[in-house]
Image (cartoon, rainbow, N blue to C red):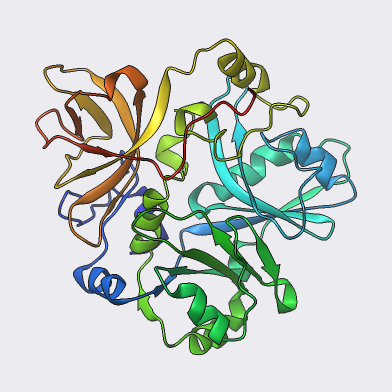
Length: 350
């Protein structure tokens, strides 16, 4: 499946049509699922793109645009963050880090050009250049138990904590990402396009799989992503971004900051993101409560699980989850089995 899969509507069996997708879904092939069950795997993730924010004012400029503390960002740490509209709705979720005086932002490639253009509108007299450098880089994801050992055997200094990074030769980067219950290790290599063959040869001991398993692992870790079909649908807290460290409530203003802060401090967090499993899901993007025709929530991400069925992240009111019969994609779909998140929900401002 190619990068265009993020913008195509798959049917429940995993096939794809050219129609614009109503919700981001991925279905790994049977051989990829079997490879993952047998050991750690390597996925080439063409759906991820990279923006470079450069210039003397790069840190100050981006600090005033996004939900996190860019000024305090360390070179050896990758931070999840968000970019919102003035109404506090997410246009993008990204991983970012400092590369010397630059900031780099990793996010779905399908929305990277639009984010570049939008940020550039606000540069004005600042000494900042924002470039889409996706074509110059490749993203390799190492997934599954034992992945760290394979990388270490290849001579790499593997970071131990989620968010930690190692800078490699030629500004290439290795980072550890948050993991889930069924994918205990998620590591990402960002390598130069001309050196991709070198890295694939170095890591030839890992079975190669498609990007669909990468997105399943993202679901398993309960880390949200925003693609074109889900832009402007969620405030950061509705997809748990603040408990993942993706919102800093002590920094200054940014687009949507007033709405995000008001939701946090006035006790209006009535919607959250949850993790669930189902044997099958319907084709619609919504979440339905049994006995009602109107949707109560929205699918954030969904992917076929290596053990079968679908794992998904969905957003809905918190009072509709406990003891309720929820259905994904269709009011007649099989009920969801809501699972524990791999992290706790808490108030970072308390």
